[in-house]
Each structure stands twice: as structure tokens, then as C-alpha cells.
Image 1 (spheres, one colour):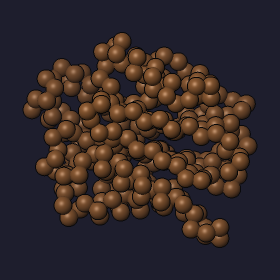
Image 2 (image 1 turned 180 degrees about the vertical axis):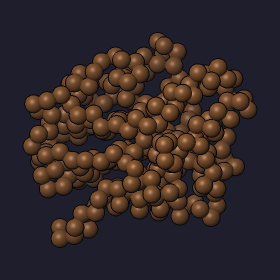
Image 3 (image 1 turned 30 degrees about the vertical axis):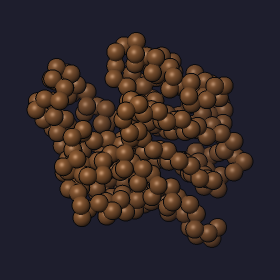
Image 4 (image 1 turned 180 degrees about the horizontal axis):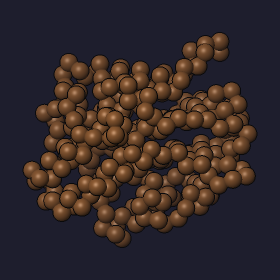
Length: 264
């Protein structure tokens, strides 16, 4: 695992952790200056949600039937919402939210879940990597990008555009993230693959996924090869170099790389 904050003076709003048979990555989102809405902040929300979800992913006993990943995510969202419902305006459009990526080993299958613009990539022995993504937020965000880039950062217009964008969140025809409504979990992208087909799997926040989808530095087979040879830190190092070269603001970047899947 490697997780690097966007800046040394800012809290890392990503979270990742793993247990014996599951891994979780949370990419927190919010608007700076929203402290009047939620006194805890985005990093708190991401870490709280990730911890709750990983705890729920731990098997109760070998005889307990496994609950679906969507059911566990819904419960984790409800838990964290309850943790700050009495002190914060959890329903406000700019209150903290997060995207989610999950892997879980279940018998001879590797299950996955993606909600929002985090990524799961499954490295397959005999085929190209399977990239699991949820493109809805990206597609909607692109329509706002020209106006947001033209607005003065921090201005009323800038914040108004961000509010309008986030108004599409967690509603039909929009995009879905973990926030205050556990029903958002039902909109996650889910599936599974036989472990025998896979050589490795990786979770990436969108700040790390930039290496392919924004900067086009390489493709997913090469990403998996670099992970195998040099580890997650090398991917993030290349992303940071590209951000500097193109004068693009850094984002929190997190990668959890899982190997030896059949040995757990």
C-alpha cells in the first residue's frame, strides 16, 4: 500500500486498509470551507467509513453466510452518518462524501465493488487486465469543467459551480457516492471473478488512476507490470512528475496492490 497526500500541509483525504481476506480504499470528497456544515471534515469521514467497512467485512464465523458487499457498504454508510448526524448537516450537498473500492476473497472467487471514481483493476493470466470503473461522475463533471476552469478559484462563482455539480450527486440520472444515504450502495458496480484466473488485483483512488486516464503515460497492462516490479510508490512518483510537468494540481493518491490471492 502507498498513500500520498496532495500537499504536505493538507490532511490526506484517502484511506486504505486490508484484512486477511478483504481490502478497502476510500477517496474522500468535499469543498474547502465547509466546516460550518460538518465540523469533522472529509478526512474524518473517509477514515471512519473505511474503518467501519473493513470491520464489517471481517467474517463473523466460518458458518456465517457472507452478506453482499452492497449490504455491508450500506451498513457502513448508515453507521458513519449516525456518528455525526446530531452535530453536522449530513444532508447538505457539500457535506463530506467519498468514493469506494472494495475487494473480498470469498471461497474461490474474488468479489469487487466500485462506487464513484475509484478503480479496481484485476490482472488476468490469459487476458488483458479487467478495469472496473464507475464513469457516471466523470461524464457529468466534464460538462462543468470549462466553466470551473474559467472561474476564479475560491470565488462565489467557483463555489456555486461546485455546488451545482454536487447537486447531481445521489440522484437518478446523476452519479452516486457514499454520503448520508445508505441506498447509494445499491448503485455500486459489483461483480466477481474466479481467483484461478487472476494473478493480482489493485485498488486505486482517482488521484493514482491519473497515470492512465488523464496523463496517458501508459496503459493498464504496463501499470500492472510496474506494480509487480517496483510497487505502488513508483506509480505515484510518475503521477507526481506528470502533474508538475503539466502544471496540474496534485490530488491525494492511494494504491493497494494485492498478490498471492489463492494463498489466503
